[in-house]
Length: 402
Image (cartoon, rainbow, N blue to C red):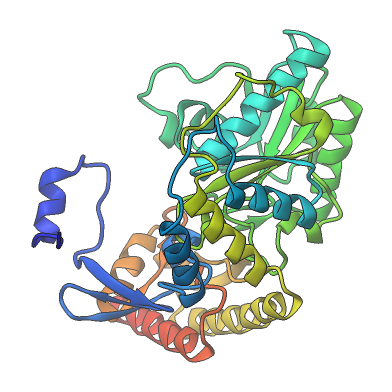
């Protein structure tokens, strides 16, 4: 059955009013270019919020998905399937981890990580060791637990009492985290680069200090790599460039290349606290999603591919700084790899929404990270010419607002 005719107005009529999407309805995409109902073409420098790491309708992923779709779509976790087993093995072979729990999203992966950390602490140290230390500006998902751990008050307001036992301190503040971590701490949860918080990388000394504090207090270190993982920063996972290894890592977004999937990775001693019946997911380990993710990993985790990410990141940073000079809208560019934020300054402060809107009108898709940061997270294999043209359109959009 063909999709019946729909319009952007239908979105406003039938959806709950918690989204405000752009005015055109997007209907088709190939690589880093997307076409809307209007017939207009857009260059995608957002990649579905760092999801479409190989662009839209990547031929390799389409082929894998079609092949799996003709064989097996779904089983409950009462039964094992080949793609899920192969994916778990691939993740273990490529990372510090010994065990994997598969989910459908980053929020679910983070929920699993937090539950496992508290269960592990309970099993090994008793009921009084349950505190989670997190950071102001962080984002870990929209479930009640993950939004409670996230360090952005606006996302917690109005939903009743937050989950208890959570402490927020400033990111990259060694004294603050040192005061917060104690014998009651079950885990510290942090992003190697804060995404929604404005593309702020962890200071290397800070990351090492957090690891030391966890070791000293027998607490687990959880790295939320939902956005930073799967090649986004120029290595398969950001921790690999930090000389800091977590006890638990979460992954999602890019690992499915656009197909919903996530996962929690951990060591064998920690994993043992998830005994049968303690946690589960109806769709986690779905054969369709797992087969696509397995192909994504095989493509991205290649030295030549990751080397290209680093090279393109240099182009992106240089060009963004030049746009800031040309327009006066920003003077600082933060982030790592193909995941950068232009920090608005002067009269431009608070206008990231305006710039994103003008960019869409000019034919380029960009993101925001709060009111003061324009965020870019293009496909990792974006052609140089698409990256350059997208940035030209962004520059024209900023000038149009000046």
